[in-house]
Image 1 (cartoon, rainbow, N blue to C red):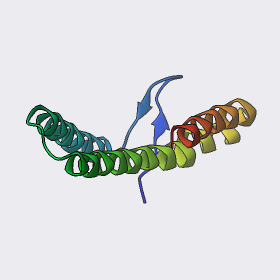
Image 2: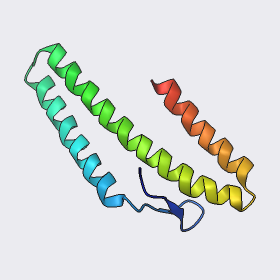
Image 3: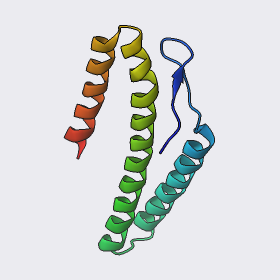
Length: 102
C-alpha cells in the first residue's frame, strides 16, 4: 500500500513515495528506449509488442500508486474540509479517462 499524498497548495502535492515513483518512471523510460531500439533494428513484431505490453503494465502500476495515494490523501482531506463534491468529480474524471484509455 502506498503512503498518503498531502496537498501543500491547490495544485502542489507532497508525494511521500517520490523516490520510488521516480525510480519506476526511470525504469519505464529505459524500457521505452529499448522498445525504440527494437523498432530501429527491425526486431520481430511480437517481441516488440511484448515489450510494449510490459511498459503499459508498468505505467498502470505507477498510475494505481498515484491514484491510491491521491484518494487516501488529497480526496480524503477535501472531504473532511467540505470540498467533497469538487474533489470527487475530479477523481471520477481521472478514473473515467483511464477507463477509456484501456
